[in-house]
Length: 141
Image 1 (spheres, rainbow, N blue to C red):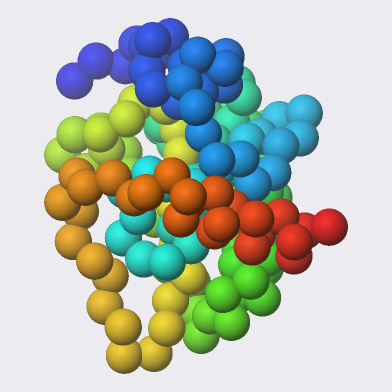
Image 2: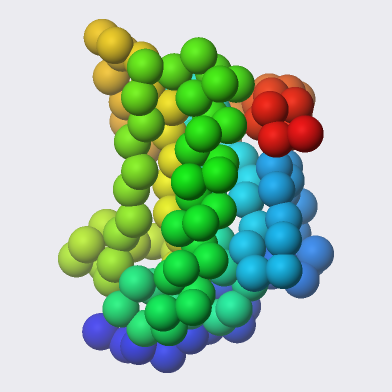
């Protein structure tokens, strides 16, 4: 296990504008955007702007700001998707399922009787991601 933050991870590149993302929300501390490999309709991510590998090395202020945004986006998800509930996921280290080593929280709108799609690595079409991001944005305004 390495605990060094990698400044070249995909989320750091998104924060620097080097990689595209379908933005939902941004403030001084956090950035929320659509997951490009969604496990359910409306699957979003919230990341801190501060470099943090995961929950285990993020400082308390970073954790506080991320979860403040998670709640904000979660409430919008419930409205935007008329969801029955939410799944909030967060993975730490490879054994815990973490793949991208920048602290991030998954927000997935859930519907009674509908299972999560498997993580196949298939990317969603950009126009669908853009439309889903807009659904969030409309609820946040």
